[in-house]
Image 1: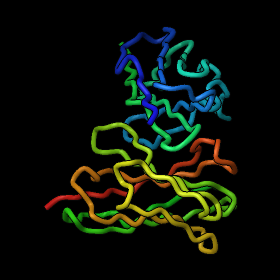
Image 2: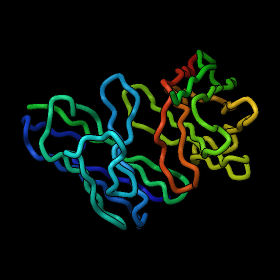
Image 3: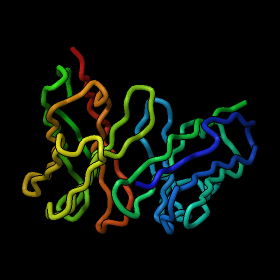
Length: 107
Length: 120
């Protein structure tokens, strides 16, 4: 099965900083890669699908890129409400594996 | 309003069984792939199973194969997860989730989750 590895596992950044999270697949998943945000105590929320398509209603400061095995989620200007854990997920075929998550905090 | 409401969670002993249910509303349930995703306490998300609209395709994570069965009743707008031979490591919040009209659309609607605790 394809493994999904995110880095870093956690990060602390200042409001307004540019934040980048990386997701690497052990084999190619073309562009079948989604990013989710899970705020503390809340249900996950889809941010990006198809590696780079922003889900409706998601602020444009979020963006995704990549294809094949290497993907990134970028928050262009970190806001206090972005404190959350972020997960990538591949969905090209079963199993639809998630990455282990990246916890984002405000410095 | 699109809504998914899970039920059926609870405390069960190792080796026991539970059946989770998910009531869907606000969308044409029979048109969508559906999923179960779980999250152990303090841990990350784990995809558990997917089911096609007509139950013609079902997929499972290796750790639950042979123990869990995903099913649906389109007439009742309901999704189910029959969980047998439960293990302590199955303890988690179980989310019912809606995927897409096609297999290659990720989950984009989530229920609030139901908690399953496996303990003696």
